[in-house]
Length: 243
Ligand code: NAP
Image (cartoon, rainbow, N blue to C red):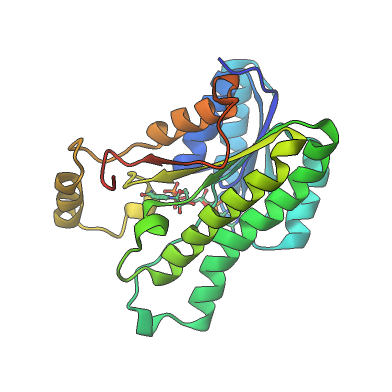
């Protein structure tokens, strides 16, 4: 059971973020659904969740890699009890083909975005001496993925940020944790063919690929009082893919 009131989730219109937003709404939370491009989906989901769970859900636009847009989003949102940094981008390329723009975009969304959102959320959390931050990294940030050096580096950065920030803000009553998903079936996996997906499934000890709901239930747990003694941790939700 969760007793937390206001949750902001970045990249909440699709994939993992959508499932996370749904799970928090289902638990009675007010949810601020951030989106960048998926405007119609975000507004539609906010309306559906508000009606279905009788709670207050709104969609707010911001490109998380832009500090000005992030600041404006938090001004609109007000104080948030839980921040879920989920927005992310990925692409597969040989290291030698990664352009400056690929690097800046990937690190800009996946790592700068986490920095900007934490910075905006923390001021009010510190004043209230409570709050929860959950960052979505990736198992590739833990072990590295071939042809995803930029992605792996950005996600490893999220793990380092989580651990350091957890130490710094724990005395202010704020917990910071990270979820490190394995292979989760969302649009992010759309570029992978059936053979590759089948190989990834076979490599997963629990013998299935993950769902967005697998990540959502971990996020709700980490935000709940049941996790009140957990901070600075990297929770692998990967079916045993990396152990
Ligand atoms: P997805 O289906 O491709 O969705 C990506 C989400 O990120 C979308 O909601 C998108 O919003 C948002 N986003 C992208 N750029 C943004 C920006 N500049 N500002 C704000 N939002 C932005 O991906 P997913 O699988 O749900 O991934 C969610 C998170 O899980 C990512 O951080 C990803 O790295 C991580 N992850 C995924 C997997 C996997 O196997 N799927 C594995 C490990 C980690 P708009 O559509 O509104 O632009």
